[in-house]
Image 1 (tube, rainbow, N blue to C red):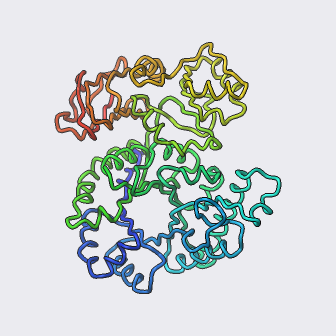
Image 2 (cartoon, rainbow, N blue to C red):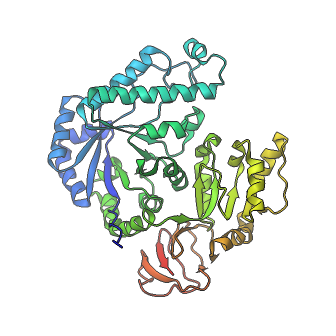
Image 3 (cartoon, helix red, strand yellow):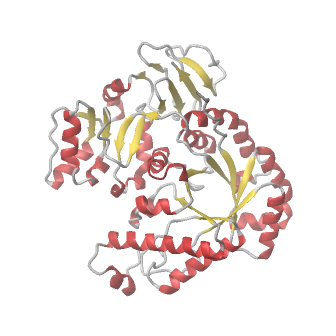
Length: 465
């Protein structure tokens, strides 16, 4: 059998804002371009809506071996709608024309364009009310968003037939949820998807859920200004193939944050090989697309940091032997019979108090026989976690703040995300865990993982049975 091909390390990219572009155009760019290239960056996201000298700078970047991608906020040139947020109307012809013209302008200048927000609107103008008809607002906004996205892509391809159009989803997800964005139907329209912004770290749970729908189109993540190294690690473990550094970090006088990230790339390549080749295992976490869970995705990241490996999925986990159901599962109106069938199959199931309360308020209480209850208090989590880990063949005792990533039946990665390290005891029963790789110099590859080991904040270790 031919061995699997080596997965390349995550690509490093740099995102330039309009103000950054003006600084670089003022003469500061040449030395920075060299530093970026030395650090391993190969792609630059450059603002598309600037004057002709912008393209001169882009040509200089291209000559230096960078792939230059035009970035824009398609909303910025459109007149605001009659809503509370100032977002454009997706019904008025002048607003739609302004957005498609901005996309077409960018596509004429760049082979690839990335749009920084999905088509969003909370407008309730007369045009929107007329177009909505008797449909609920959420259904109307979902349809309008999909139509707008299709118009964006058509405009770009009319300007450049081979144009690639990608999309950035915000890290916190508030805007897509508030506007009723139909991710299941919208995301696949684009050639690639990035997640995140400079203010908040992207959600690994949401990214893995999205990859269940669009596969490798879920390309990567924008790293935040705060703690970008840990975000790079968690997103690499989530399967991200690209890490985008904000220019505020990449353009610092010594480019030190980018250099530190570059130093980690070899170890990230090791984790990328594992995360993007070996199937991930964990307790199934059912998150229906209509639940809008992404507006609070960070609460699910915190849930995973209790030491319970999760496998987020938009589809009901009918063949899983262990699953956790939060209040977001209640968005599935057929949840109860599905849960009953899964329970009768012998699966280990846990539910949260919030789910029970949501179903009870709806008048469809969930029978509690044969269900485990996931506690609200982190001090009570260990017992419930142990019962869910058992079907996965994993024993773990350690502090809250450690993320466990279980790949196949032999590989386990521990990542200390909390700032209060404690002793860790972990085992795959009947198997001896050896250190395959680590960011902690005290844990040498080839050594056994001793019970009671501690990981420094931000450190990780790959164990292999």
